[in-house]
Image (tube, rainbow, N blue to C red; front, side):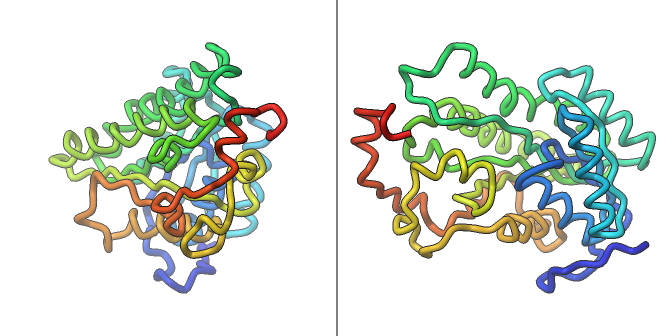
Length: 274
């Protein structure tokens, strides 16, 4: 059955014959990104640690789109597991054109309450996971002259409280985006990032909403997963064929106006504010 797009901004089937590999694609924003790509003709393999949740998500996306969505359980912190997921993708679908690095871990934690292990875990999932999966898939992406998308965040732009672990990981991921754009560009591979702002109805907002005032967003609204889907389809499309090394901020301008009068009280008395 041919995938049918519910998005009128882009033409249907612009990714026909292409294959997407997405970490974190079984839930949250990255599930939406995967589904958007499939609705526009791509076949997809999603990766995360929970096989049961992955299979359920893949089945739901197949029913919703009429497209091909497969899954491979893998911990992105483990190179052998991501290499196995890449091998599975090639065996089943024959190629990899697009890669989304979306696996991430996050939670609220003041500096004094952030354990050594918690900081390391977020760095391993976000940063090392991005490196591991890209390393494993890179030769296939070079062969297809494909494109890589790293999911970032604006946390470190202004030093958001309780987010030094995730902010540090995302800062390093943005650096990788630039380095890879330079090194992989001569092979025809584009590498970009997306830094979503506050996105409604997501686990991230459930966890981090205490740090947000909607009034601090110049466009005066939360983002939607559809906003990030549209940015993703654009960056993978031929319309962005000369764009590489860029992290596109999709946050309604919040990073330009990070006003939140609650910050001082939250930092000085964190336990009562979380």
